Length: 92
Image: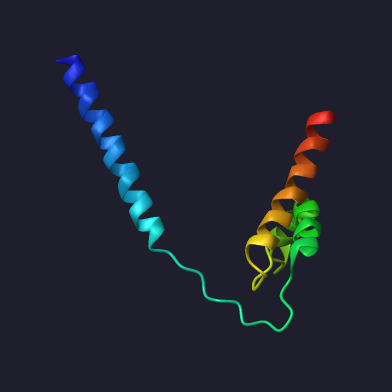
């Protein structure tokens, strides 16, 4: 009886995960139409100042992520900038 309940819970989790992934796969972001969107180095800078941007976003209308941006390269730079914060926090 107990094994049957575990199997049902596992099946429910698998189905819920698949459902979430299917719904998330339908999401789209509008294409950026900016003249000169932020790129890789701007992403690094925004990732590096994320802590200050987050604090500012609580009290003002500051966004911690630039849109429209140049896409994958901005995202990669953003992650590198955040990675610098994580390494700094881990080393102290």
